[in-house]
Length: 218
Image (cartoon, rainbow, N blue to C red; front, side, top):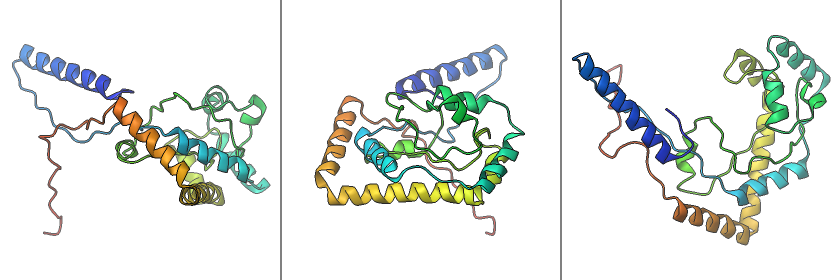
């Protein structure tokens, strides 16, 4: 079960549990609720996001070679246009550029008030300290996430360039926060204000304990 806000997630979860209990009553059976995991949405920090974006614009985009573009083009032949439409509609990429096999340009910053539907345990971490995430090009433009098309570029120069670019942006952002304490204070003040408006609520009930796994060799 997923929801953009924790309260919505709790409401949906309880409704599903009630449905299960109702089905158990109708069939004269029993239902048991077991919590396996849970995560909270990312608490965005615009101060850090703007800092990273400014650094990305200063660095410029990722330069991919003709060989890398040709390799990505081969991968794209096995996928449809769904991701191309996402690049245009969601990320603001020009239609002609969205057809390129690899897009290393710094795209417009258009994620304010946007909540990604993906799940990440970084979400809970972002409620304990100011956090920000960035995305870089590491796979072919048409490849679907979690597909073999992504794996096909992960251990190539394409994935390596995207990884090193992200590492450089994060390192420069961290250095800027050290050299500019006021900017760090601004990020912390934004973080505290967000927590005052919406306090953190752990999605896992307090009575639930982590699973105890026995070592397979014992």
